[in-house]
Amino acid sequence: MRPVFGRHPSTLGTSGGWRRRRWLTAVPIAVALVLLTWMLAFGLTRNPDQIRSVMVGKEAPAFALRSVDGSAPVRLDRLRGQVVVVNFWASWCADCVTESPALSAAWQRYRDQGVTLVGVVYQDGAGNAARFARATGESWPLVLDPGDHTAIAYGVRGVPETFFIARNGTIAEQHSGPISYGVLSAEITHLLGSSA
Amino acid sequence: MSRRWYAVALAVALLAAGATLAVVALRGPAPPASMNERVQRVAETVSCPDCIDLSVADSPSITARHLRATIADRLRRGWTPDRIRADLVARFGASILETPPAHGIDLLAWIAPALLVAFGLGLLGFTLLRWSRGGPSPAPPPEPLGEADRRLLERELAVAEGDVE
Image (cartoon, rainbow over all chains, first blue to last red):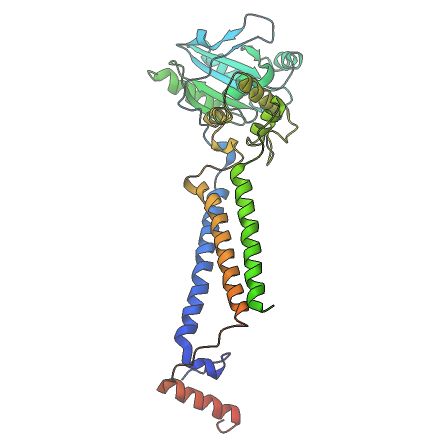
């Protein structure tokens, strides 16, 4: 028979109660551990940069913003019927420098196919934005957003952030962080091919 | 004074303190007097979108400053604080609020404190009850030993006394 160590002989007669108390302690600890592990797994496996914006599927907020170069303001309602790519950016933002060649390539390829790219300058001056555009060869419309009214209307959390607006004026997709030519091309091609 | 009366007095004092806190929590803070205070009240409930763990009221960022201006503008136009918050949630998502929504996984954040308080109060009541009775209750009489346990006990005692190698 297996000897029983670590227990006083007087407790041997109450083994049922002792086991019950052990279960009463173990079960809540196990439940708490499972909950904690599940919450950690849920939180740590989600990339906060890839959380889908709640604006996707909604009507794109209207804007009429002054151009960096002093030309006519850009009004979103005048672009209805086109696919519009709205890119929030700033000259002080390193990731915006990274994504600039991809935006340039997409602009060159799609500008004559019913696609408009609008660069909304985020918390930056017109002079800085114009110098950046000259240095990188950006030729698409760049507009100013004083007071961040448009950025707030679109729920922008930081730059760069890009919104794809379908022909019917709804936000079809949103991308946080530097965007690649592949993502730009795929989204634009999809929107050009869809009836929306 | 006996231990029982000490326990009763302590329990009454704790209940009175809890009731006072509950009344204060239900009444809420005094209504804001100026527009700055109204903006501050709303901004305290909104998270700064480009900061970590800072409200729009506390953050020095440009975004927070612009959001405070937006809140002030909407209050001047007659929007209620709830409508302003609902509009921000529609644009940024529920995470823009400093307090989590009361549904889904976020419901845990609302339930857990209440459960912990209830557990703590229960434990406190139980401890006070035992203390007022003058110590832990006597252990229940042991159940009679079964045959297997009796043989095991005899063997263990024999080993302890050196009768068995």
